Image 1 (tube, rainbow, N blue to C red):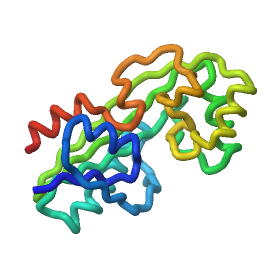
Image 2: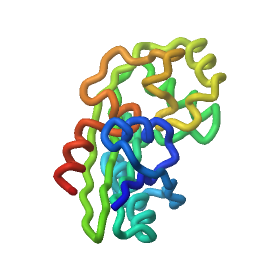
Image 3: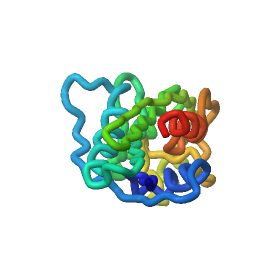
Image 4: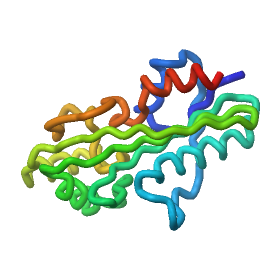
Length: 184
């Protein structure tokens, strides 16, 4: 039995490496459209299960871990920005505010499935126009939910974090370690 991370994210790969020493990464090429009736809070777990299920179909005897992270502010989901303008819109909305970072995780193997989500609250400092523009110019926001990486040393927006820091990076490593041990 092998472990497969259904993701191409270098951040998730690094975090899973804290838990599992030997695993393979296979990105799940799925439609990430959220159907009507799935709340903002449920969307990350929904997508994590879609990703894990997609890879598990062709690897039924392996442990497949799918994950998805969303930022939720004012009832709206902020996924990865579609453009620099979209990134700017997200960062301006989050500036000086508290938002939720929700990571959904799904573990599949041999027809068994376990899914959960972890929520971390993040409060941003007020961000200046220059901070936002300079950060967007690095290109870093473009592949991250909410248009920011909490781990990006050149951009330090967080005033406070309530919950799992690694969850904000992209994988709730401490909880996943425990859930994976109980699953296997």
